[in-house]
Image (cartoon, rainbow, N blue to C red; front, top):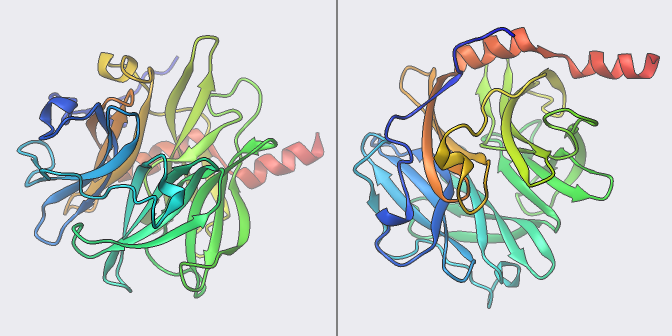
Length: 325
């Protein structure tokens, strides 16, 4: 076995946010979307689960993205089932994309109702007021994020529909953020004993690099007692993002620490957001740990790309091998 330095280094003070930090009564905080504000402040849009088991969003701000968090004294965005019945059982797992063309932040999130989990979209300029666009992908669907710019004149949404035939990552396109079509399979869950067999999903929004859209995605390995959520890498063509250029064979980040292995849901690392430092390379990955807290790990985009080159393969080459076998 070849040992290597970890691609992400956990912060020594993990977890950085827990229920004990919150200014009001709740059960847990996890799966936070993240962005850097123009003044350099790190903003986390945290999923907060109340003691009924229903989730809402609450903003936490920090000057250094590590500590000194200023948390909104009341929930920032609550479900509104009277106007948006798809939010009856809560809103979950926000992902933030800044859209330069709109000069706004797009927040994609899971809206949960009797019909199951769907994908909803809201726009905001300040994370105080939000314009809800409602459901943009019907149940069962989740793990969604917008790309920050149009592709061939169309907005692009990465998401994860769930069907009896498999749970894979798809991409869809829209002229107006409201009407979606052109659905294409983007990344397929593998089969058999693989770490990412049968069920995968995008984790934070993809990172645009000169060589393609770099995606951190999660794979779910089912075990006799539970499931293990681990992270892998793939990269997609910039102007044809449904085309996978390279996919890592192994996972590169997994539950190891006690706060990741024990909690409301054991053995889970689940990032919904990151920030990139002014050097353009350092990435701060904010992830939910065991559905109970928010933790931080730091890595290098350059090293992620190098690892993927050394430890991945082209999906097109794999498809050819399957057809020839």
